[in-house]
Image 1: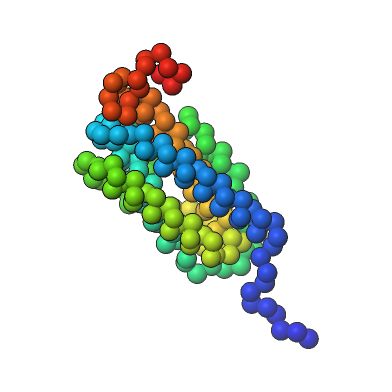
Image 2: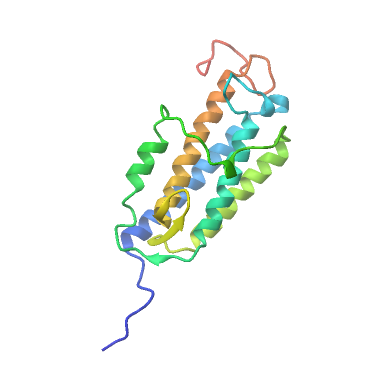
Amino acid sequence: MAPLNPFPPVHPDAWSAHQQVLADYSGTVGDLITQFASFTGRAVNQVPFPGSWTAGQVAEHLEKSNIMITRALVLPGQPAHRDPAARIAELRESFLDLRVKFKSPDFILPIRGTYDHETMARQLRLSAEALLEAAREVRPDELIQVPAFGEISRLEILHFVLYHTRRHLHQLRNILAHLPPGEPGGKTDSNSPDA
């Protein structure tokens, strides 16, 4: 009788979904970095309307979130006793429903007063690259314990990252659309389709 393999192969569906979410996240990060580049000059620090974050605050929040998720991804995992994709639909529905407002945990709230555009763009990009690098090396079908989520598979948490980033990409577009005309990084024509 052959000994049990303590490291069973990754299920092909989980592996395929893992590769897809990494590709989708990589593309979304590219869109995010491009959108963030639109905030030139002082626009990165401008509040577009009451209650809104600035573009710099959104970038810092995402950077902090990326760092925390990167740390979570490398936590010791356990073999899944359930479908490792079970929570993906729930995460998609929650985070892509833009009518729902969330309160960020304190540890990923933006705290800097003002932002240097180039520095923040670099930190955001580096945090996303580190997350992707860690994500490529882990088993997507293993479960980890993350305080904000409880028991979650790495595949599910990577989907959270994708949906969370897409949500904030939409937020950056909204911020840019609400900056006053003529501001660096703001609208140039109040009759533009984004106005």
